[in-house]
Length: 416
Image (cartoon, rainbow, N blue to C red; front, side, top):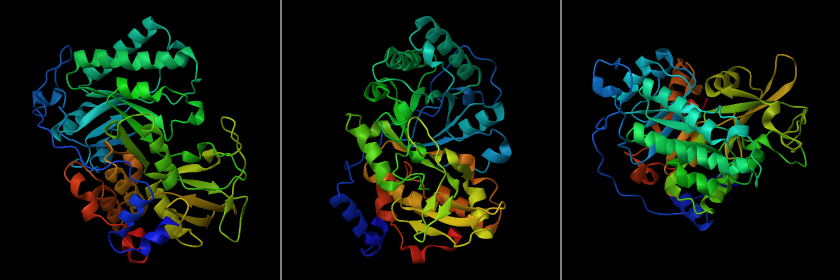
C-alpha cells in the first residue's frame, strides 16, 4: 500500500505523506560535538601492545555523532577487509584478534565484546555478577577493546527478581568499565518491541538509563505469529518496525538512545501450498506460546539469496506491499516450492530514511558478513550500494534531501 501511494507522489512527496500519517516521531538533528582526539584516553592493566603504533591500543574516543553499529561473526582478514570502514563506527563480535584490533583502531572504529552468556538464574547473585563483570573486563582489557554489548535474549517474567537483577548487572558493568576503560560504551540488544516479545519482559526504561544505548533488533519480527494462519512474511515489516520503535519511545526513552537494527539476511520458507495470490502457507511451529514462527524458515545471507534469485527463481523478484520488502518463489531440489523473504538496498533505504527522519542514534546490522564474497559484477554492485547508502555522521543531516525512494521500475540493474 505505502509503496503504491509513494510512487504516485512527486520526488519529495512521500516524506510529506509519512509526516501526515504520524510516522515521524521527532524533528531536528543534534548539533555536532567537539570530540577529543581518537585515542586520547589511557587504559591500564593490559599486556604489551601488539600494534606498530602503541596509541592504537588505547580506547577509541568516539568522534561520530551518529552510530553505524555492525555485528560480525568472523574475524579473518579476508572477511573484514571487505567492510566499508569509513561507514562503521563500532564493530561488535564474540572473538577478536590483534590484527583486527589494530586495523579497526587505525580506522577509528570501536570494538565491542558481545556478551550473551550470563545465566539468568544468577542475575540476583551480587557475588556472581561481580565475578562475571571482572572476567568480561579482563577480556576487553587484554584485547584492547572499547566496550561491551549485552545480548542475553532470554525470557524474564514481568514481576520476577531477575528483572531487577538484570538492571543491576548492566549498571554495575557500566560502572566498572567506565573506571577501567575511559570512554567505553555499554549497549544492550532489545527485541523489536518492548511488549514482552519472546517473553522478554525486561525493564526497558531502566535499561536505557543504565546503558549508553539500546540496539533495537528490528528483525525476526515473525518469531511469534499468532495467526489465524501460518504464512511466510517479511523479516522486518515496515509498519510493525515503526510500531516497535514507537513502543520504546512511549516509555520516555529518548530517540538518541535507540539504534535501529536491520537485517542483511532473509528467510527461506518451505511452502505447504502457494495460493493464487502468492501467499505461502508454512508448517506450524509453536514458539513461546504462538502457533506460528519463522523457525520453520532457514536464514540465508544476502549473497546466497541473490544466487537463488538469479538461478532458481520461478517468478522473479516481487515486492511485498504489507512488508515493504522483496520476495520470490523457487522450486527446491526436493521438489517443494519455497518462498524467500529478504531485504535489499531498496527496502533498506526506506528504513534508513525513517530512522534519519526520526533522528535515532543511528542504524546497525545483523550482520555485516552477510554480503559474503559477492565477487560477480552484479553482486559487487549490490555490495557497493549496501554500504554506500548507509546514513552516517557525515551525511545524516542531508540524507533526506539527497536520498529519495525510487520508482521501482527505474531501480538500477543491481536489483537482479
